[in-house]
Length: 415
Image (cartoon, rainbow, N blue to C red; front, side, top):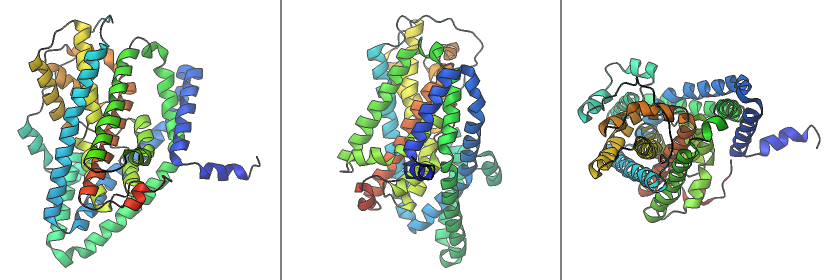
């Protein structure tokens, strides 16, 4: 192969193949180099920083554009109701699947670990407190600190206000529309670096969380991954086929880019720019629907975290020999579903929410130390489920609102 043809070959490769290649090479580098592979971590840090750079302006601009493009407050309320109902439904399914899988395969049976004391219990936030915290005291502070829920509320308020003032708001709408397009283009630039960033991330993870960590807890990792795959293939694909009358294979192929980035970055908020891109270009969801549903989903839809909570709660109960009652199982489902609403879409947030679930059913919080060593590996799976769920709900809502381009959805998947 000539030197001139190599760049052309690289450009012709779909983005997900480039990212997958970076992921595979990163795992190989970590396996061969061990902890020395952390030398590549700065590549991953640059990529994650670039993704984080996009989140706040992208969420804010796309939400405002999405709301103003609807031109109908009633329609926005209808879409919001559908979105939240679907997210809560799938979250309840997810935590139930996680507990069922852990009950069947018993990942904690026969495993012996000693625990270190010292982890403090976290109190679950009340529903009233969650609602109060949605409204930002200072929107600039919310934007600066990346408080996504408050940013969403502020953006919705701006969008509704622009609709209400009619023609006077058109200049501002055009500014937000142009700014959103700028963010989409900037996302393309960042994604061009994704294969190298993913390589750096995976080299570090593989080098530091090698077989010494994987082997003792391989069973709980396997159960969590199995439950995650089942949730995507059965629940998500089933809802698309039954409620949307859509081919789930097209959906699965269309979201590959987002899934690979979610798996490697372990951040559903960080994957949001790629999710928006997949929804618009691969699934054919309108800008209005995707710009509203996806930012909300990146914050409140945590199906993967719910699966993780179900699997790990029962795993810890098995480790400690504690018998759980039906009331405990119900409490895990209820607390896990409610806690998932307040889970930040960033790496490691699941551990904090897990401590809330454990405290509600009397399981020892010090047992989290067992999970902390493999949390990153579990985090990658649960984030992938979260992102797949965001895109499934976006597709269903787009179909129900007649804002799904069937030509794009049914076309052969191209990057």
